[in-house]
Amino acid sequence: MPLCLAIDTSTRQTGVALADGELLEWRRFSPPREAGTHLLPAIHDMLQGHGRAPEELDVVIVAIGPGSFTGLRIGLATAKGLAHGGRAALVPVSTLETLAWQAPTRAASVLPLVEARRGEVFTARWRRLGEALIAEEDPRRVAIADLLAEAPDDALLIGPALAARRADFLATGRHLALAGDADCALSLPWLVELGMRRWERQGGEDPDLLEPDYLFEFQPTPAKARA
Image (cartoon, rainbow, N blue to C red):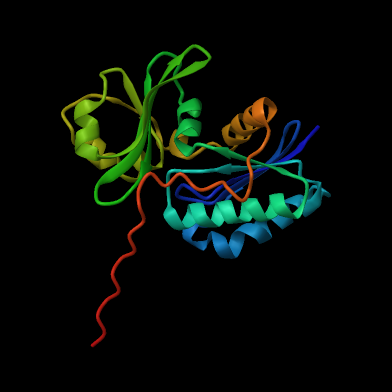
């Protein structure tokens, strides 16, 4: 069976998972901004713990965003390095789509939410129909107030931005379904599952061409004036 490593640095915590036909282990640890220090040691420790080496990886799956700008850069750079260093296929998976698949519902609109800035979230809309997931809207960046005004009545909201800003979503007069905090973290098993499905359908991507899905142009915070 193919040896697969999955990496998520797009959400509130860094996550890595290892699978070989079945899920062997998954971990969540530091915030994405610290992933540059902790990610590679965690991957090597996980592989070593299962008697494997980076060169044995067949597939490297990476959550491609949208999400933390710095986190996405670190995660993709790490995934590219592992793919370049061995024979592994590089497989990107949408952060929002992963959250939609893991939603605990089978017949409702699902709106995954990832934090952006200035009271905004990254989101899109899917509909779960039994075991199918139908895209109803392209990913976008939107203000929370606008999202709440536009969401369909049968929407289920899920994702790290909901867990972080639950009070904002509860303050509205609308009675939308809100996933529990335990369901809001990106599921590493689902990231593995979706990545392997994509790899089986179409193989990997060219590491030299793949870029994160930022959904916006990064604008660095102006430096404070020195006294």
